[in-house]
Each structure stands twice: as C-alpha cells, then as structure tokens.
Image (cartoon, rainbow over all chains, first blue to last red):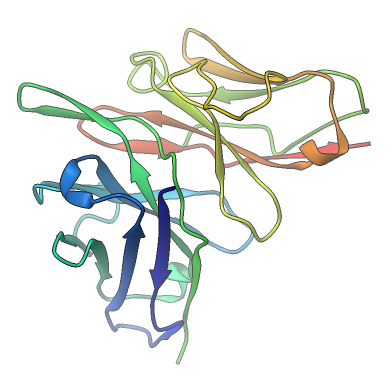
Length: 126
Length: 110
C-alpha cells in the first residue's frame, strides 16, 4: 500500500522560506510516476502547487512559479517543497500526493492524484 | 489559469440523487478527458473517487459517476447516504503540464 507522509515546521515567519518534505513508503519513487504538492487554505478550495517526475523534471503552477522549488531525493524515497517569501496568504494545509501522468514525446500530461498524505498545517505568522 | 467553477453547496435527502457541476473552459475541461473528482470529509485528506472523466478507482462505490458535456463536467451521486456528506472538488488538466482545481462544493445530506 502506497503511503505518503508530510513533515514540516508548522510555523514560519513572514518573508521566510517554508520547507516541507514528503516521505513515500510502499512504492519506490525511482519506479516512476509524478509526485505533487497541493495546498488548502483554511475554509477554501484545493490549489495545485506543482509536481515532479522521478527524473527531476518539475512542473509548477504559473501563479506560484517564481517562489516554488520542488526537488526529489530518490535515495531517501522522498520529495520536497520550498516556498520563498511567504505571507499570511500562504497559511494552509499542505498535502503531498502521487500524480499519475503520461508522456507523448517531450510533452508530459498530468492526470490525477491517487494517493495522498494526511496533510500538514503550515501557519505563517510573526 | 482560473479555478474551475463549482456551486458552493448542494443538498439532498437520503436515497435521492444529486449532481455537482464543474465548469471550465475549452483550454481545460473541454480539451482533455482528464477531469478527476475528490471527496473530502472534515479534517481529512481528499480521496480520489473519479478519474479521467468517468472512471472509478477500485473500491469506490458505483453510486458515484462522472460525466462531461463540452466545458462542464459533472459528478452524480445516486442513492444518497449520510456518509456522503462531505466536500467535493473537481480537478482538470489545463495544458502546459498544469492542473487546476475547482473551488469545492459542500454536500449536505438532509
């Protein structure tokens, strides 16, 4: 059974960089799939942040692209999210999830999220 | 890239059927057979219930079905049960290797 688990600091100060990690068990990241980050501000809808392939190719939400870095560490079977210059608007529950995809030549198409972590609340406050 | 449009809330009585709409554009919902739906109970992670417009993952009740017409996708829940009360969100591939979610719909079982 594929399981994902997010970990992070819980509280970050405005203007700082938040860092989250997602540990995967029950499946080797090296075997394929994209792996994604999604967030949900309190009382609001889900927002896709970005996804990464095991090869390291990354795909970002255009609205967050200038502040987001997603990386993968296949040796530790985990992937990570960094979001810079955070503000109160970045306060949210952050989820990691497996993101099946397909490839047609050089074009990657992202499909859906089938396995999710339990989520971690990240609060931005001084 | 704008969020897909869903009604804020829908309601139904046990045993009835309800439909939740997810409106997009010809750049996302209307261009790809890649709409997915998620069920989310309070303080829980989302759960995939429909993928690629109308496919159900193993273990998901056949009371859940997905469809699409033009730029609008729909989730139908038949034989409504109390346990179906939750938030439902749609998601679509939007081209350029990007994804977009809807704002979510709260389902109340009366």
